[in-house]
Length: 104
Image (cartoon, rainbow, N blue to C red; front, side, top):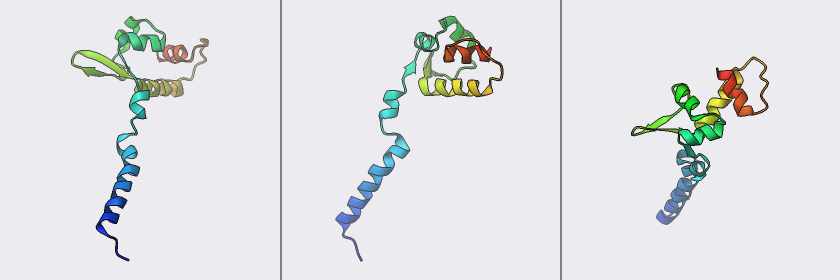
């Protein structure tokens, strides 16, 4: 069986369509993965901005020029790692607050 050039091209295009989300994401990740500034992260974590500044070296972040930014997915992963590492009972009902308290 021999394929025509246009059939080969159609197969190649379909393969690209199927593999593109695996290589580059499907576009939804960027929409669902906001980037926080200090104020936004402090609201998300329910802590004061000063706490973020004091702990920024332990919190996953990146810089845009001189601006510090935090990707939500990285923060969620960081919190999950903190949760797994915690062995002590924590009294707070807020899960984010419990994770932050366990980090101190």
